[in-house]
Length: 418
Length: 181
Image (cartoon, rainbow over all chains, first blue to last red; front, top):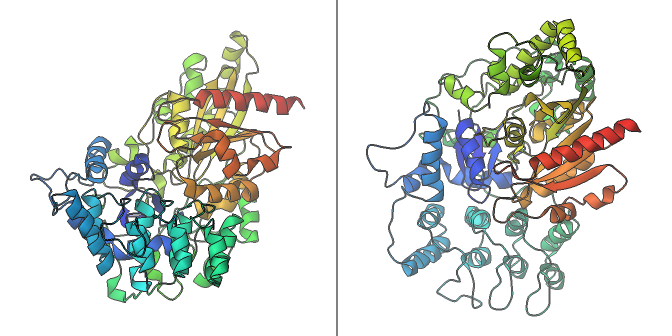
């Protein structure tokens, strides 16, 4: 089940592979949940424009046969090996350029022609994104990012986003000391500025004229840029900022993620388990209302939650409507928070401090041995669990979430300990 | 069985072992589960994103700790305070290489969390290049505006295990002090 999104690469993965993606670090892949995280349009820009198919065409263009690609039933070590080779070493990507100069040329060409896939191709081949471009543009020492910002319009925003998220250093100045932030102000590109600010560049760098980007925006009367920068200086910029972009979504275009290794041969989605009675009222509010709610619970919900402290069910958000990305929710105002955690979800509250007298660790020292089976579950790391379950994935099958599992066992333990 | 437990404990001369329950919270992917199992098993485990929470018991020095590893993501932010009810303290884990999450982490820490509990901010992933130091993290999270509260910040790495036990030791001390008052 692809329920996790790598926001800097624009691909969907399953929960097991997302664990490995996370482990590689955020400079390789930044994983966010489609269900548990709030995704803004800025995060979805790449997801909309890349997708697993196109991405794998590039990154797996040179896959040796027999394919080392793990299947949904592969274990963690096989997955890890493959994912490391694919994403860190770029071992399987197709190679079109031989020399570094050729790669630089392709990089410029990709940005010029606004071809995101060509950009990913040169990225996969290990181009030095931060090297100044060969062809000197407006100023000496422009990098691809500068160039992309300077020439940006609505169609090239995904390229800017990709460069911002994958170049590694947003503060690289040109020969005149202008960073990409300065460029946004010079050429008045507020949308690029939003994308850049998400990557947390240094705001206070000055160019050779001694101006920060903010000074520059003021001087050039770039009102939108000025406002964004002043928010950023105050540290109040909304990280899930809305990016103006022509989303151009048609129904059939809905990004069904496809054959990534990470995807399960998805079993038919089961109807979600019926919600607990007491929460049904909240399902009657419209999606719009849900989005505008501060969290997803109404005050009444919260009250119930604090009273209903003994519910141990966790209803994860397997909404019946669509298994894929929130992009499906429609273009004009793409969802602030990918409202997938259904408002009716009950989240089990910690059952207030139960004494852990029967726990495994303790039992090793003094307590009588717990009933068979318990010890193992309590002290086992969670990772092997999903695999031993075969193709049952956690996303759907909330009954198997480790938390609940250990809680239940734990509870049973405490009960029996009394 | 409960009587049996206490009788065994009594024989060992420890009729009332100290107990505390603490929570590990922090943004997605900050390394909470890895830290939890580093504390429990003292080894690095392969983790996958935790959909909700994990509870483990561990004995640390003379305290029995019930540790909740709570991962609700951005959508469950307001629920976090319920997980903190009745706890004695918490660890707030931040990925120190990921400057993009700092502002979210700051907001969560300041608005969603009951800061009367003693807590430790863990600057995790110190083993990676580009990790900011604990003192830089204090600046990023503007923790110095919290001077009156009981908090501390530690660098650590769930993968290498560096600094993890020291941080827990510190938290246990803070909890003990808070209980005395």
